[in-house]
Image 1 (cartoon, rainbow, N blue to C red):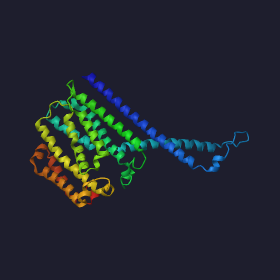
Image 2: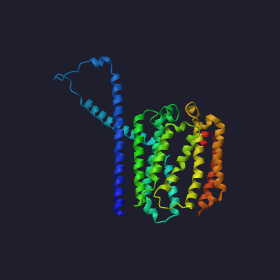
Image 3: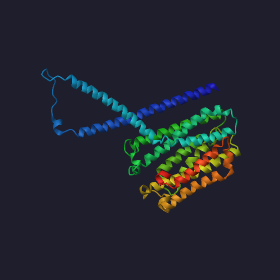
Image 4: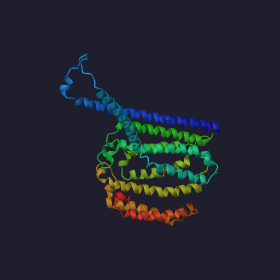
Length: 368
């Protein structure tokens, strides 16, 4: 019904305004802290003699202020205001970069692929009907996976500061304090839950809620991400398996949005085949990242390269990629699943397989 949709639209607009206001308050707080720190440092650098000089009282004999000096003071004030604006933009950019805004798009993409598979096997008219809930759920997933990236930066701030590339991250470089980082993570998780509730309520349309729906899936993912950042990433192979799960998890989230019975055995089989591809690829990527971080992880984590060696780990990672390529190339299920005119799947396989073979011959930093 239109009144219901209008109510949801107003609620989403209010949430977006809340996000904007919260971001502004967080940036203002960081700027005040930086300004306070800078003022304290300036006070410590004032020469002792300057502190002891008495203030000169105003008198008719006092030398008047030069117009040029007044103009310079005005210019300095304008310059400081301009610098404050630049600092606000820089702080906001630092918070946004903690989410890895480009990387987490793949999670939204996996969710959209899952919904597309479901829609193609259901009533085609439901595409436009479910579009608002799909967009809202995508926002929830984006914020949730952004939380996963940001909370990892908060937990690994000390370790990242010793890493050559990661040392420039906002928290590792102390441009953002750990406390503000955790506050930002709390904000992201709360907004992800709120958007998941809205998306789920949009699709139920008066039906009773299912026991474990899209919001329950969101809560589980947020809990897994928190556990990963605080402890589980240090356990042998658990880190790789969790990252593999998080890569294919949006496919499961797609099936839980709505619960309208469109998830048939045929649809479930297709989503399972997609997960079979995505899971080992993500595990392989995490193994290669562990090889890069072997010096930093030594003594703090139990990763595969530290246990079996870098060469064996690299062989395992590339073997997983080779197995995925072989499955996509040899199994008829995937050729049937992605059959189209023109043959897009055949073209992508013809391009992707040689790229993987070429990547395996390159140095690790470029090849992965």
